[in-house]
Every structure is written in structure tokens, then in C-alpha cells.
Image 1 (cartoon, rainbow, N blue to C red):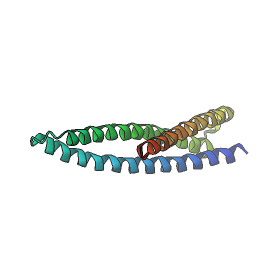
Image 2: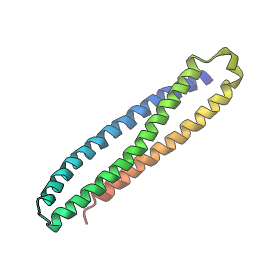
Image 3: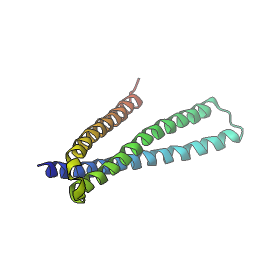
Image 4: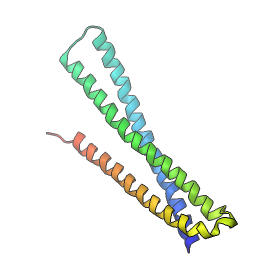
Length: 140
């Protein structure tokens, strides 16, 4: 029973890691796209065009990049934690040393608790992304 649950946790963590990496890659591509736009705006402004609209676009691009970078930092944390926990789950399930069998149940409960915390953290990140999306796409 415990081995099946550990195997399920291991599989879930690998899936979650893949989702977090996909979101990271997507947001990273948005950041790079906006950074190219920022470079063009900076070049225009350095040429002497101090049009307030160009300066506002530059400031908006900087805020956008900082916001997405903050989300990506959170995704990196979730991805690294998923990776570490999946390795621990794999070791507990498949390569556990016989001399540590009495600690298996304790490690199991620690693994379940930390995975639950990671799931809540990931839900929070996704909730923040959705909230940010709704705020950015709102037409006033």
C-alpha cells in the first residue's frame, strides 16, 4: 500500500515538474519578446526621441518583464522542489537501503506533507498567474 502511494507521488511529482517547466518556458519566451521590444524602445529614446508615449511604453515593458521574472522565479522554486522530491520518492520506493527500513514510514509521511505543501504552492502560483492575466486583459 505504502509503496503504491510513493510510486503515485513520484509520478505526480514528475508530471508537476513537466507542467512547471512548460510554464517557465512559455513565460521566458514572453520575457525575451518583451526584452527585444524594450531594446528597440531604448534605442529610439537614446536617439533623442523623448516622446512621452515611448517613455511610457518603455516603463510598461520594464514592469511587464519584472512581473514575469517574478513568476518565473517562483516556477523555478517549484520545479527544483518537484525534482528533489521526485528523487527522494524514487529512492524510497526503489532503492531504499535495508538498514533504514524502520525510517521508511517517517520518510513516507514527510514526503506526503512536503508534496502537499508543494501542490499548494503550485496552486498559488497558478492562481497568481490567472489573476494577473485577468487584470492585464481587463478592458476599462
